[in-house]
Structure formats: structure tokens, C-alpha cells
Length: 193
Image 1 (tube, rainbow, N blue to C red):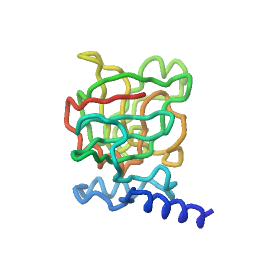
Image 2: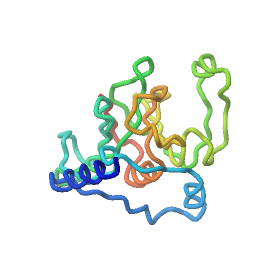
Image 3: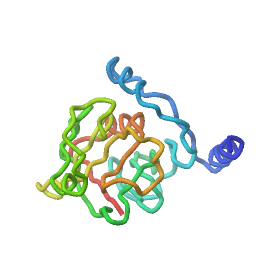
């Protein structure tokens, strides 16, 4: 299996993608300590962070989530993009549309919406930290001035990256959501398709 992963990584490198697994140097000491507590496991090369040619055709600064591919693209200048693997909503809870980032938060508190609590009575609000389901960072999405209740956020379940397993939010490995958080501004356009 490990040989297969190495061969796939080599094939992707030859195809014009470059692997970027260098941790973000802007992490605070607390971030680095908390993230070290979260097991990240091996990343499937299909869902690792890559610098690639932009497949979206969107202007720089735009986030595009391709739910079928389980990929998120952050569009850069010069027709380039950073590609990240993500977990998306399963069929019952998936969401698509256009939104904007209206808020960003580091190690956010989690306040599950009433609909989620009704479905899963065991869930409850949690303070930010490594055990929190929102992970290291969260980007809050709005449609106009209306909170969509959907987020792009980290996860304490990195083994689910590449699956349709969330309640609609877009989940990323914590190290990847920190990278995206540092690149994205408030009011950035987000397209989920």
C-alpha cells in the first residue's frame, strides 16, 4: 500500500502538481502544541495539499469546492491554485451554492445548530481546542447577510478526508485549514458545486 501511495505521488508530481507538506511557519506556540495533540495520520496523496494549475476559471482569492472530487481550490494569481482534500456533506446533508466568508475564527467554539441537536441528542456546545469538531480554524459562510450555518473548518477526524461524511460543512485537515485561513480574507467568494 505504501508503495502504491509513493507511485501515485510521483505520478502527480510528473503531471504538473507539486506537493507542499511544509507546516505553516505562522503557527503560534499554542497552535503548534494543540495541533501536535491531534493525530493526523498519513495523508492519501490524492487529498494532500498541492500547488496546481487552476481548473476553476475563477478570479484570484476565490474558494471553489468540488464536492464530487472532494477537493477545495483556493485560486491564486497567474492561473494557479492551491488544492486541498476535504470531507463534504453526505447525501442527506450536502449543500451547494455561492456564499462569502463573513467571519474567520481560530480554535472556534462549537455551537451545534438546533437541527443537529435534534438529530443527535448527544452533541453539545464545546469550547475551542483539539477535541472540538471545528478543529483549528473556521471560515463562516453567508449568503448575502444571512448565515448559511455552513462552515469550512478543520477536523479532529483527518482519516475522513476524501469522504462524504459531514453534516454539510466542508472539513479540512487542521494544518490545511490553517494554511487556507492565512490566505483568505473576509468577503472572499466561495463556490460549492
